[in-house]
Length: 234
View (cartoon, rainbow, N blue to C red):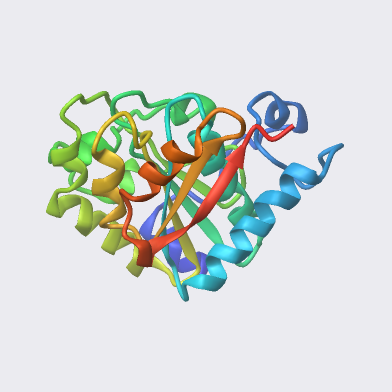
């Protein structure tokens, strides 16, 4: 990967000043190389490998839950972290859950210059100003930057398309993960799926009925539906 090229596009975003300790990663429920139980990390590595194999280059991957409480943000964050395990790759995680953003808190990012909302509404012109380093090496975050109830118009805007195109053009080894809202909560997941290359649906194990899963999956274009992840499996 051309780390120098990415550093020029996103100054400082690849060089976290304070990396999370093992204890901080566990508290924040973020996978790491040295977990006592390696199964969660292995599961996300496998998911990462399958997704990257299905789409050449730097794909945009949407992660959305069937309903709130299924852990969609948990899956999105750890999928991006698994991509960043590979020293030849980087990941940008974008908090697209504009009605209930949380990733900036999870990753201890203070969006001083603004976030996705500020960029999409035109208050921030430079994309590099809303791409922040995190405590996880090679993982960058675009925080939501604010709450918006009428979020579909922003997420489906030409400025959102341009943002993703800019990230795609930054480096061929950069993966973009969109943390979308639950399918049952709003039309935003469907809107985001139209700008993503692949969509991953997160179902709660023993929580979502087969009918609910089928109805949620039907929202996405079958050609871009990468698969289903069951979260909270005992």
